Image 1 (tube, rainbow, N blue to C red):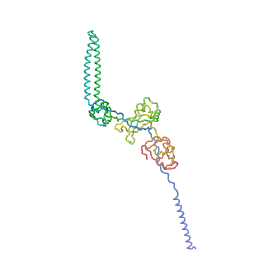
Image 2 (cartoon, helix red, strand yellow; image 1 turned 90 degrees about the vertical axis):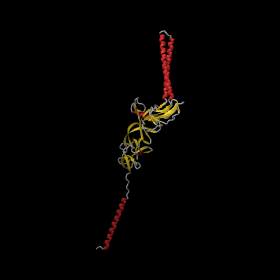
Image 3 (cartoon, rainbow, N blue to C red; image 1 turned 135 degrees about the vertical axis):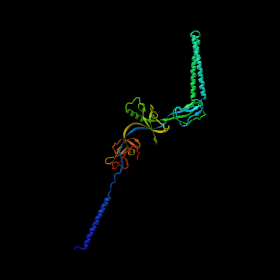
Image 4 (cartoon, helix red, strand yellow; image 1 turned 45 degrees about the vertical axis):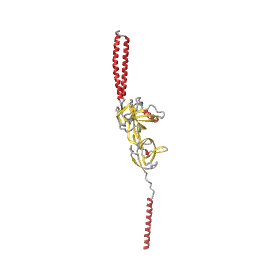
Amino acid sequence: MMSWTGTSRIVTTVAVGSLLALALSSCKDDEQKNAYAPPPPPPVDIAIPLAKEVTRAITYTGQVVPMATVELRARVQGFLEKQSFEDGQLVKKGALLYQIDPRQYQAAVDKAAAQVEATKAALVGATNDAKLAEDLAEQRAGPKIDAIVKAAKRDAMAAQLDADKASLESAKLDLDFCDIHAPMDGRIGRSLVDVGNLVGRGDPTLLATIVAIDPVYVNVDVSEADVLMVRELVRAAGDRSPDIQPGQVAPGEWRKVTLTIPGHDKIKLIGHINFVDPELNQETGTLRVRSVFENPKEAILPGIFVSLSFPLETYETLLVPDAALLSDQRGRFALIVNDKDVVEQRRVSIGQQRGYLREVTEGLTPTDRVVVLGVLRARPGSKVTPKLVTIEAGTAAR
């Protein structure tokens, strides 16, 4: 028969064993909880390259110049009697701008007109005398020499009439020059002479200047390399027609040009080339090209520097954010995520920048998944967690 003491020892042993088992189990759970767990792949934004039709263009900076500038000068001497415009206003062709005192010139016209009438009357008498002398000479009732002399007087009087008529026309011109009209549409500057002053004495007096600002010209000097490139594109397009002038894309059709002002996105004008110099400037190695732009609201003024874009050809290309194209000593490259979400490095060739996007001419396909955000977390050979986003043309870069 077991004693109480023995039973107590058995219970104690079982309890100690149970506690030891619980302690060992707890240690194993803690070890499992403290085991190292690798971090998840870093997140990156990826995008499919944007396939788009774009236009290749060359861009130059030029300065706006007026289509025409005319100096108004006094062509006859006299006192300035009238000014018919406000300084700086728009004037129309033919509008009266100034008037010089016309009285002495009106008197000269009247005198010349009277002289013409007197010479006409004298010519009539000389003609009758010559006719009578000729008739008498034919009838042998008068000397032949008398007919010859009177015929000469008649002819001299006819020549005098022509001279008097020319003097009358000259006097009328001087009278017309008293009224100074606008030779073209444009904006007139400030008047340089006040009413009441004597003008036209000696050299023709400069009164004011008119500037034609609608349309306007922009001149740019195109480099020799771009000139040769454009000529090669024209040659590759087919046989050049002799009717096509330099700067035209077809007979009578000039190449379009886009005008913008850096820092002023709201100003954009479409014009066209209208003149190309026939030879390069030997000192600069450039070719002068002139473009014309309609400017009805005076959006641009002469003297402003503008940017001109000359479109050349249209083609399909792939576009990605320029910030997604990294560079090293070997050139530009992109980071691509393959179908296993592993990053690969891809060498690329780039073209023109268009907003925040950049053309990729070689190295990418339309199905590549390009890392566009989080490039610092994407290392070649490492795995990432990609998130697909869409590239939108014209959207600001993030």
